[in-house]
Amino acid sequence: MTSCKQIPIPKLEGVDINKLMLFYKMGNQFFLDRYSVHAWKSFDLIQDSRTSPMMKHFPAIEDWLDMIAKHTAIPKIKTLYLSILAPKSHIPWHTDRSDDVLSNSYITSIKTDKSFIEFEDDAKYTYKTGYSYVIRTGVRHQIMNLSDDYRITICTTPIGDNPYAAN
Image (cartoon, rainbow, N blue to C red; front, side, top):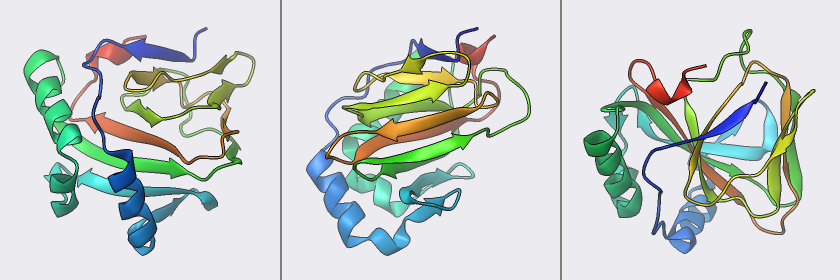
C-alpha cells in the first residue's frame, strides 16, 4: 500500500522564502506548537474559509490558490497553514486518524531539502519543491529534517472531498 502520492495540481512557485522566514522569526509568538512538538510550528493563513490578513504578504501562495480554484477540482479551501520544522529535528512516530485512507488534506513542499516522511511498514518519501501530496495519516509515520535549514510546507484542506485523495 502506498502511503504517499503526488497529486496533479499546479506547482507552487515563487514563494519568497526569505520573507517567510523573516515573518517566522519576527512573529514567532504567533506560530503555534503542533502536537506538543516544540520544533514544529504552524501559522493559519486560512481558517474556517477565512483568509488571514497575513496572506497578502505571500502573493505567490495567493496566485497558486487562484490557479487551483480555476484549474482543478478543488474550488474552495477550508484551512491552510504554514508548517515549519526546525533544522536537525523530527516529528516523532504518530497517527493523525484511526483509518488508513488517504487524507483529504494535502501537503505542499516549499523547502524540504534533506527531509523525508517515513511510514511504518512502508517506505521513506521525499517531497519535490513546489509539488503537493496526499498521505495516509492513519498509518503510523514520522518526519525527519536532517537539514541545517528549516523545513517548510503548507498543509491545505479543501471544502468537501479532495478528488485527488481517492483510494
